[in-house]
Image (cartoon, rainbow, N blue to C red; front, side):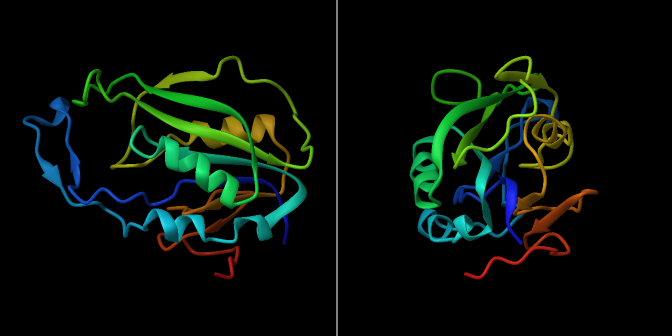
Amino acid sequence: MRYRTIVADPPWDYPEGFALGPGHGILEQRALPYAPMSFEEIAELPVYRLADADCRLFLWTTNRYLEDAFTILRAWRFRYRQTLVWHKTDANLPASIAPNSAEFVLVGTIGHPDRLRHLPSAVIGMTRRGGHSTKPEAWLDYFEQVSPPPYVELFARRHRLGWDVWGDESANTASLAV
């Protein structure tokens, strides 16, 4: 099956684990709740084989992997178009010079996918829900509003009605020959 919309939230590697924020008491390091992949392993995935001739990719990344995400976008044969920002309104995690309160979605395309409508802003603020690396369900709503089906979410943790999924934390409905 070929998809017109692909969402990918790769299992980026954080060897030191992750810090729990001030809302959880003292800062402490925890092991990642998923099996990470190296940059090279992520880049080598043949995601382009899932793409329709006109396809839009939404690739999640963090500050640490922002530069690498551009390389992965190109390795997957997509052309960069825009960056969306999730402003985590309840996050105040320490970072080098400012609180680590944002994640990024690189938007890339193959061909000329239809745009169903515009989002009101490229920066969307909302609170975090769920565990480490869990994205608000509302983001998939946004992707559906702007990009046509069929949809697939790579590295999915759960199934969503109307979407195919691929990942070791979900009941796969899509296949990605590696």
